[in-house]
Amino acid sequence: MQRIVVERAGGVPVSRRAHVGAVASGNLEVLCEPAGAGARITVETSVDGYEPVWRATLERFLERNPIAATIEINDFGATPAMVSLRLEQALELAR
Amino acid sequence: MTPALLRRSYVEATPRERIEALADTGSFREILDPFERCSSPYLAEQNIVAQRDDGVVIGRARLAGRDVAAIAVDGRFLGGSIGEIGGAKIARALERAGEGAFLLLDTGGIRLQEANLGLLAIAEICDAVFALRERAPVVAVIAGSVGCYGGMSIVAALCSHIIMSRVGRFGLNGPEVIEQEAGIGELDARDRPAIWRATGGIRRVEQGHADTLAGDDLDELAGALRAAFAAEPNRERLSLERLRRCFAQEAPA
Image 1: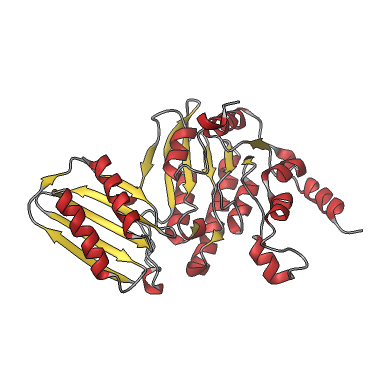
Image 2: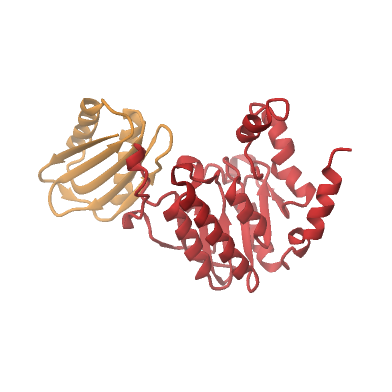
């Protein structure tokens, strides 16, 4: 099990909480909450050794969506494509 | 009947969507949602990532105007297994239920990683079902892709009414456990038609182990749930006399 944290300053706060997904095979749970300033994404994943892939995926998401939010990800071996889709889904509900 | 393409599938819906579709529209209020972060403290020690609601959704809802406890097990997380936290959520929701409860069971039973704590939780849940069913309907719905097995199959069997879909399966031991314990001659766990013939919704309703059969359709299941709440509890299914007759019928000659 591995913990990864990605942070980025600035951004527009999301307006409400959103919860999507599940800790199921090839899937992930995303909890998105409004934050005053900056984005902070915390990942807990059951698959070790993919930190560079996680960083690339999450940094790209924050680049495209400059939000201020606290996001928690609980992952059970989701692919980067799945991670991106879940993040977009959470953002759609939280905006 | 709704045409296939317009049907809203129960299997495809998440636990919260299932509750919302089955209860009166807009009436569901979740208790201990994922943001409360009541998750299992034992899984991280075993290198397993926890889900923030511990795989159990509880809350209050209205059903045909009644104030009821709504409970759903999330079959996606660790096979819908029941650990200490999820089990306590179910037991407390049943204990505080007003005019009845419905349980959407999609579960393999006790969570092996939490062993005795899961067993204790099942005992508490059984106790709560016994107490509640004396004064109000307690309805189990078994229509998810996991089915309902292990300790939670005992909980379902205690309910005043059981609704199953053709997708649902219901038994004490799951197919893999039977194959492992009794040998492949008894049951081949890969033989899916055989599993559904023995434990699927159609068979269980035929046998009288479950009361109502429905399709994989949220609207149809919502109708069945209302009918179950309006009906008298099935004392016949709950009777020891019927169990004795079942054993006598099914015993090998």
